[in-house]
Image (spheres, helix red, strand yellow):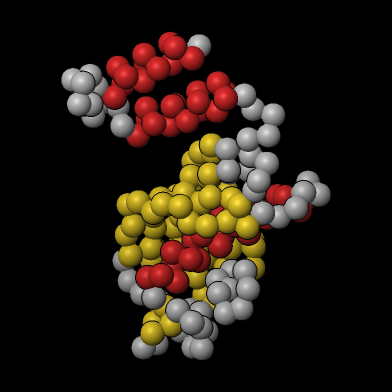
Length: 173
């Protein structure tokens, strides 16, 4: 986080699966419009809560803290835009990890009222995610993720994606 894009004031809790952070919306914040915190600000707040939790864990393990980027957002619900001086509490739950991509569910609250929620994937900017993995290991993990995402799509050859992946997995086993 760097000014003017700071959207976490305090990390309240962090472990392998969960992080909770607070953020007070200031009137001069770059994501404030007409006295309200924008949709983009809420998404970035969730992403920075993920980063704060991950960064805390990396510091505790004496590892360098990796930067990151929002890779995907799904199931976004924004219930209302909070006003300036509001204290937001953001809770994220890690739902999965593949190499340097972390899948999370994030929820933003104001006085225990839901403000926004979404599923988000964060790409950690680390160059060592594939170190010591064989091509076969990488393909197994990638193919598993593809299978989960698209198990009933028909290919131009008339087979379903799951049938094609099964054939591919048999050939790399």
